[in-house]
Length: 304
Length: 255
Image (tube, rainbow over all chains, first blue to last red; front, top):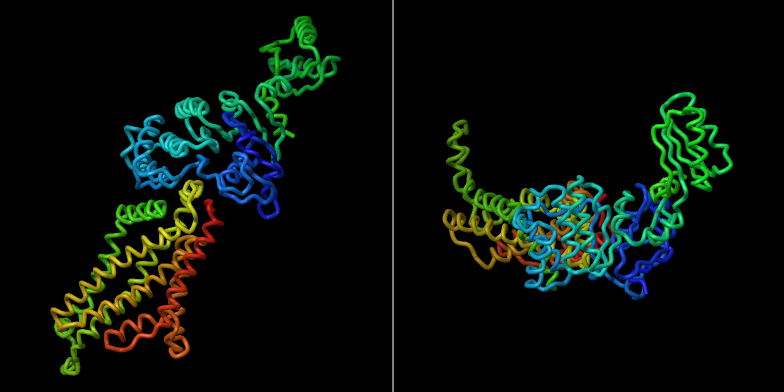
């Protein structure tokens, strides 16, 4: 029984489809990454899930309730660039948010303090949000999404705008949070998804290109692949072009002295290529044989 | 109900922190006390300007206390309304353009309670400003001109408050739809349009909320009060709140 069930969800703006009939489910306790390039419809999807945009078509069902039931009480939402009232202090905002989600005043105050401490903002809790840095605002955004203990957390690009240190901090928090609640987060950085997620939904141009558990996608889409970098000499470039026509070659892309080959048999290909390279005295700079990653899958989906 | 209170508390906190709760009443107090002071010292002011023809002031008659009070309230119909509209215009438009509405609307709150909280907060500011302004005007009027009928002053202020509240409600309605300055412009235009219609065709438009300022002045001169403008003003305010709620339900995201 999935916590969230999305069926044929569609949204178009002025006739142009932004999300074009996507269906997926999120099991309770899982972490789902909504992956895709800019403009794939991730933000629109999350906004529809958060009840901020009415879908053009399709249905969203939460916790087995009939579609259309208001589940915002159970929802934590962090938009791409959260905006706060700059004249409020972090703690004031948290209490405000907690009360609006139905908490009593006393509980709101104590929980707010605890959540701020958890995201590392307790020393700044009484300062005005206007003076917070980008990373602090993002952590406050995460805190306000968590304060009412939601069953589902929707995070829109939670780490994209942060510097490496801020990114690290938020990722650590997410790793922690995903133990307690169901998380759906969007990102265009595949590495983030691989780091903490169980399931991946890869979106492109408003549709789901691929979806499944991370493990399954890895197994299914990792292809035997060989990467070669040579010095930029005519001889080397000609040699790389000739390799295209080998029997083991399934797909080849060559540019600027760099080649990526999908091959049918890594062992055979490696032996042949290395022998030839040695025989012809090709100035090899790099040679790598192994499996293609999801990054390649991503590029393949996005590129087409 | 407790959510409505939470939202209202936030609005009032913002009014205090942004000094709106200070500068709007200050402007109202200045407007209010200027009228009796200027009227009373008119002769001295003109004399001090030295180039008044001889005998010019002979025909000047000091108006009665009630008339001065009515003029003081009249000040709120122009500058007062402008100040209130400017103070209200970003209530909803600002939340939308800054993006704070997105976080607000992701929580289980109804658009009606958001709009009602904002309306009530702006109403509170209006009442505080008007009560202090009227008190200042009445104090100087009594000191300089003579006694006032307190019941009439209260009734006249109440009628004026209703008219000002119409302008504030209109601004809130447009603020749910347009950007702040445009919302202020439309609200002022509509209020001015109603006033103009009323001054051109007073008998046919006696039921308009724009009749309220005139009625307020006539109450001070012991005139009579009709219910029509009050009812239409109440209906207009309710319609504005309902319309704003519907628009807020639709426009949640920064545009």
